[in-house]
Image (cartoon, rainbow, N blue to C red; front, top):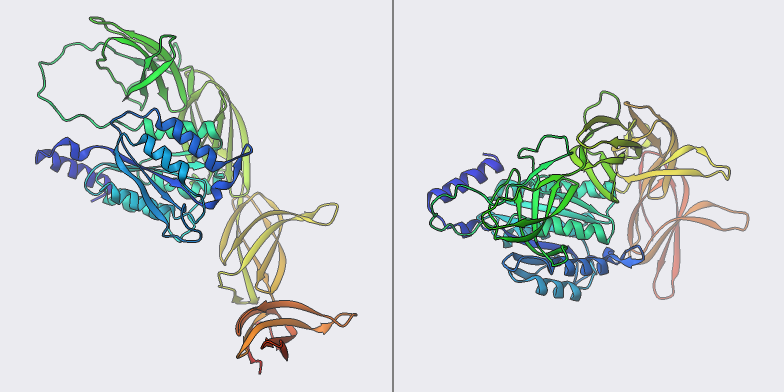
Length: 549
């Protein structure tokens, strides 16, 4: 049984058994990144300072009965993946306590975001009742866990579990590595590059979460009419939207007509009843928003029509013409009103009418198109990045592949600048690493310990290129009982009589990779730093073991 079907089955069983609706109440925990990277700056201010200030502002607007908690990680110790703490348990009226706790946090350690989200889900008893976790992170997982797999696991086991992820200052590539945690649970990934976007993301995930329904009371006689019947359209001459995911956010109106206290949020093709009074209502579909002041009067029906002055944009990212949708491609859309959002692989969303700059990035390939979107229209487009793929490997000798994770790979453009240097394109680690690259000529540089080499290769659109380097190297294992330092020098001396140091270690046993040739191993022992040296010859593709007496 899938996670979704399991949720529906559990919900049906709960209803059949007469379990009170409080058991299905939506409770939320915010997981806040307390790692050392939060000291990084945006617009000259530390990210942690922006996060504290923004949380304080947003938490001051949450409904008094909303059950909210705070979990933090990396805020007490450096270099420890287990530094995760439920700082404020979820309860109603915790906004001030959460803001105060965030103000006291130190930002020190690692980023165990997967384990923190899992612990938050468990604290919310996600296998028994509806639960929401909102992760705010400025970095990717650093504690050997897979956020994508965690999302699938929580989705499968949860009754009605949702994780939203706010990427604060993440690059597109970094965002892709954590967005799957939200996507795999039916949640949202929101990119925030500054304080304003962080505030919008928190408002959208914290405040706009659907409010728990009250415990059912004996129903009165059915009311034949509603006193507010809103409608929404993309343009003045477009038909009204059906149930298409639109939202209506109600605020009480201040005397001057501006937004006052938050009141409620409703979804889809909604109609209902509100107490008479003046409201500021925000009608929203995806990224298009229109706001109205609406008076609801006793005995009358208010029927505001929200004309968004917007269109729909449908984008599919492809690596080359006719290729499948590139699920790993980042689709960034900059839209009127300084809006900025990112999707992955494909997207369909409403945006304000006007000029949209759409940038699709896949690996090191990127293409930008300006799209003029008119109100009421749908622009449906494939955007082709035009890249090929290269898989990189290194060999000790022909046919003897380097399988060690310590293999470092860097890719440069082949053409040299006027000063003789090459443009650095990308880098990675380990064998069989794939890179999406624009067509052209490149140089692959590979290094394994003290052995390194480079080789040219060419990338063509829609083709897979195997780029490889032969290191002409072997492995040296050194044992020097009682040594406190080991150094490996090239045997040949320069004109001043000095040898070139190629490798070293502060231990009595050491293994490294060296290019074929003659070397001298020097061991240092004792308080008097007495030296012992042994010559050694390294042969390509062979392992050599020596003992330094």
